Amino acid sequence: MVEPIINAINSENYEEASQLLQQLQEQEADNIWIPFYQARLAEAQGDVTFANQRYRELLPNTVNPKLMRQIRQGIERINQQEIEQRQTALDEAMEESGASEMGVLLLEAIPNESKKAAAQKFGEIMKVDPYTARLQLPSRSWRLYRTGAIGKLKFQAEQLQQAEIPCFTALVAHVNALKVYSVLYIESVEPNVTIVYEPKKGQRDILTFDWSEVGQRVDGLLPIFEECIDVGLKGKLKRKTEILDYAKICDLHLPQKQAIIRLCDQQYRFLEGIPFSDLQKSQDGQATMKQSWQHIMAFLSEKIPSLPAYSEFTPFGESAIDFQELLKLIQPHINLLRREETPWDAAFNLYSSLAFIKTFS
Image 1 (cartoon, one colour):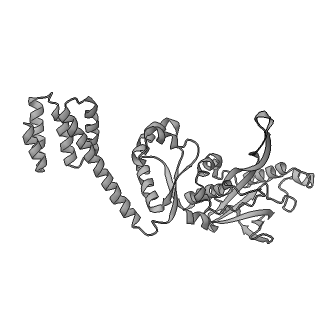
Image 2 (cartoon, helix red, strand yellow):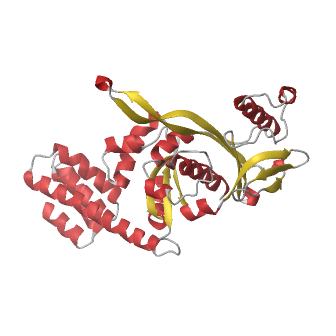
Image 3 (cartoon, helix red, strand yellow):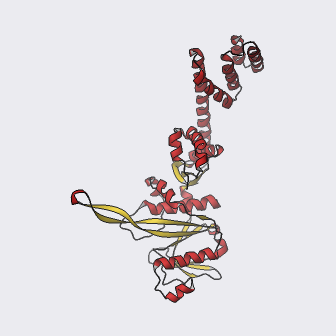
């Protein structure tokens, strides 16, 4: 009875094969080959999802060597078919204009309760084991996951999104194309905002914009490193680099101007800009940098309330800092007084620019 089923499937007479399977099931309900040929028929008809699931359900409970071998062959055929289809789709994606340009793939945060299921799907798509996949899926902020040709990254992102794993891609060229104005001080806030910025070292220029142009803000802390002397074992002096402080940064995004207005407490010239509170006026330049910065932030929160904000830079930066070659391509637009350059500056500009691109592109 099994031989006619095989012949019907091989000759693509699927209706006959289905009828023969039904007859066999009525005559020999316990026949161990019935579920296998149900899967084989589904595979031949193109229902590889059902076939693959059935093969994998059968394999752990099968002891018949011949049946076990054929189940494994079925799984291998489906795997090979998926590889070929994936490669064909990838080749088509890479033929599109601009597909070879440098890009980045970002994973978005996933709730812990959803991670187990997401990790299984992620592992299948990205070809990593479930444990590794779970470690790579972020819980708090974006995670910079891969860099490379944007065509391939978009292809991978589409697969992840179909599996309900949130992610997005961006071109490095788009990141660097955004105009960033590093504010020296704010000259006026009514009726429009006028900032004074430094286009080049030693030069000054002004930019005016309306409050309604501000689409969102990005807040972050940038580590400030200093070399310290530590007493090690046996009283030996040891030099090491530590984080001694953090620079506070607030970016305002202007989508109409494709621009970012960047304020930094370490660069802002509080004595030259306008005061932002009666208390600040009364202190007459005696306020600390922390107090003056708080006045500006309080003013912004009052002037543009309920503004969408991104504030998870630190966990993002911890993932981005491993991509040293990428960060070398990113213009930081941050001029902190440092003993030596650090990739953290470029990482923040990348984070803010990605927030801009994700929201407004």
